Length: 271
Image (cartoon, rainbow, N blue to C red; front, side, top):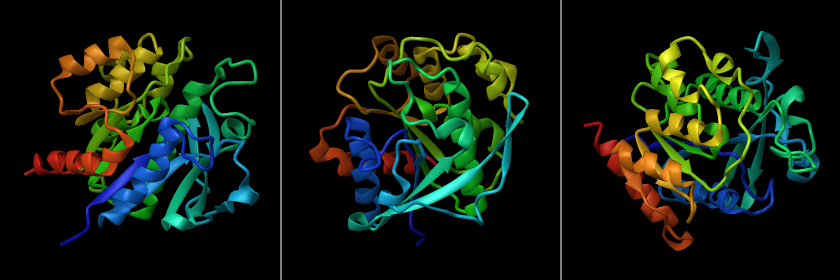
């Protein structure tokens, strides 16, 4: 029997970034899932504040070299990889000089969101999916963490649905308390459109604010996980109304078992 394959798409992972609820899950969930007998691939953006030498990142030449067009501009995709030795776990990093070389994550030193966070999210998500295609690795579960991954469910269900690697994938979106108060660029909807994605699929993000991009992810996901004790009220109400399978907030002690059981529940629904 083939191992179940789980693709993790994270906004942040410790020790590459300081520990938060999300980066803690990014560090220990993939390890626990791998130790339970599943096969994993784990991704995060290569923010400029990540020290490549200390963390022993190196470029994967065979996976790099693709160009992605966003807002009529070519952006080279660079793939790097590092290992967390104690966990026997690899992390793939999506890198690009235009988007990820600055020395902070999603906000500048004055706590203002970067003006191109919309394009950074689009580039990251497309970079992950194209890299998985190059790896010829078909995930059974795609688990997205943080708003920067919010386009994955839409792309998998619409643009990549005929691709045999993703045809059977179940997509889970974890909702965190990662709120930001200003809308993304007003052209987000047009920039996010790729082959297979129609105008009506993106209608909910006509105003691309935090609530609406989460609603978009929830709409196209197969299951939702509440990953923070407190999440945005409007997002919470939208989840309840969606009637999708939902895993409520879990303590760290129950993380691996409860998430693994939720994965299995969604996989069982394929049969």
